[in-house]
Length: 201
Length: 201
DNA sequence: GAATTTTTATTAACACCGTTAACAAAAGTA
DNA sequence: TACTTTTGTTAACGGTGTTAATAAAAATTC
Image (cartoon, each protein chain N blue to C red):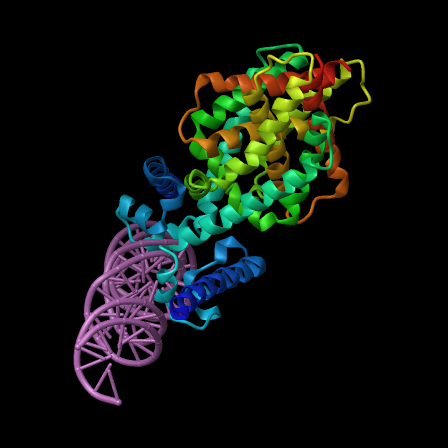
């Protein structure tokens, strides 16, 4: 009864070809322009066949999201295994995380929902400079009053903003609505470490 | 010649009514479902009139992005002015930033392009747990070997992931493509501070 | 005040999108 | 060969941003 097996094999191949066509689409034009119709066009089938393999477009995106997190997990595990001291592992994993994000930025954007239109938009918004300018000047002042006035203020500004945005966006991704007030402890933890890194050494 | 003035005043009012209708739409259903047609419907005008006041939909989003950054800047400035010591200012601004993000989460999501579909998706992806599980276990190990084994590992995990994601996403928002290799210094800076906060105190 | 120009608004359409019902063709089973 | 199941197609529904052609209103000029 090899006939049934051939059928499920063909189904899997078809499914894979859909994902492959979708991925090529994403590589050349990004997630925003990925469409069921273009996928159908690429694999030279009519539109509804795609719905025989995926419930909807979201299911396709879900597939890539899974793939992305699996790849990230593999990367982290591999890097972790190259070290024995946990502190060193955390450091190496951090660099691996960074590299993963930019080596596979299509995956990363999908996994963490980085809206690409926003990127183009933000560059036109001078008001952003107003907001970041306040942060920068404050950090400059903090550095000036510290024991290490030669510290790179721009580096510290990036660190400051990144910590804040990271905390907020991870929180927003994990659960919608206002976070539990206790979650401010994470903020407290991260920001106190940052401030110590400026004020003293 | 009050007639010309009245006209520009009416134009501004009209423009404001478009933004107001858009904002109500966003408040009730989010950015995803905001559409030109619904705005036109809400203000009881035909669709193309909106294009007399905004070049396209993107221009409307740009307007709100500006508004958001201006509000954030105002908030930060106000909070900063309540303190004199820069370190205290940075701390207070961090809390203000956090509150702003969740008090005006519609603004924040637009400003930093937090794709809302991604939020719902991530919750279904068990592979995420695989990846975060590796981070959590490593942090547990690092804490166990430290001088403060009672440290909250879950708190530290959140801090770790937030720092990483914050660094990456700010980088991706600011400029597309691979970041300058020197930008890894920001990562180094932030992550070394974090590791110190675990290993010693 | 009437004629003309300019501004403003509307209808209708274009080109997309995700999704699905109705139906035809092919493939497997009896 | 006749029947059933799977697979594929066409055509449509309701939605999106955007725009050309055109009508209506308002302001300006004579």
